[in-house]
Image (cartoon, rainbow, N blue to C red):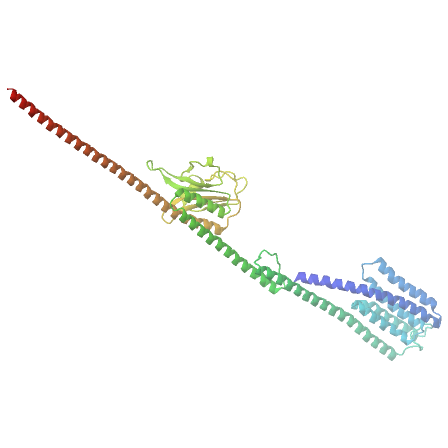
Length: 472
């Protein structure tokens, strides 16, 4: 509101400055015409000297004031005084002719053009002083004091003269004030109408931007523009809805892609970890990432977190990477089973004992890979930008889904290992059985051979015994 009032005052002042410049051209014409008129009527009573001295003094007074004080409005009041002096001059030149008094009314009407009632005051004050003093001097009989044609003006005539003069001056003062007030009101109304048109145009363009989905406009509604303020509220609501839709689209798309990835890599823990980490880091526009899975030595029973996948790291720095369960940020995340979210990392905070080593990212987030029943590992992502809350929730949700997938893959791999062991044992037993059968057959063949040979030995013995018996 204060801004509008200030702008309105500036516009009004600018308008009246322009108006006064136009009126000034009339002012010069009136002054020069009055001087010429005084020189013209000097013919009747040979008053050229009076017309020259008073007229030139009047002109000099006005133009010197305007030249010395070019930015001041004082010249307008000097102009009013000069007109009153011309009135007195004309009355004197024409020896009190009644019609010369009318020049005061003409002057008062001319001054209305400035639309400033205070400009009338020097004229009115001079008329009052002139009439009072000259009427009195003429009344007491001083010669060569020309105020009226007669020897003096009666009290009744003087009273009526003053009354009608006061009415005319009052009307001119009222009109000056009224015209200025009306002009000011019209200017303010015009400003309001123009402002409403400007607001309407801006609001129309703003609505078009909103319909086009452009919510980054720096549109600023004015204080008195209720519809504009309403549009700003609409913009805020639409921004919230649009942001919510973008977040929902981000989450839903991410969940679907992650689910497809988990189904595709359901049989390999290595592929599952690598593909999952690559997708997560890229989807979050991260710069680095690491994925650790809980492992336990079969014979020693030692537990640790083993790096199963890494994104944007040198390979030789990550081979056989193991972290104790309570070591660094990764170990703390696993131990506490809670997300660790570090943002706005200061430049002097260079040593970050995290799973991906030391660095200067702007944001680091570590999320446990867990289900309601068990912990399976930790995902760590580093970013050069701020991670929004909904993105953290996304990471936590996909980590939960990944935990279920890891559990299933581990069960599958364990069953595959058991099956391989069982199959290997069966094949070994079958080989042993075949070997035993072969040995039995070889043993049976040997026995048959030994039986045959035994029978041959017996037959031979009997044959020898028979031969011996014949010899005897």
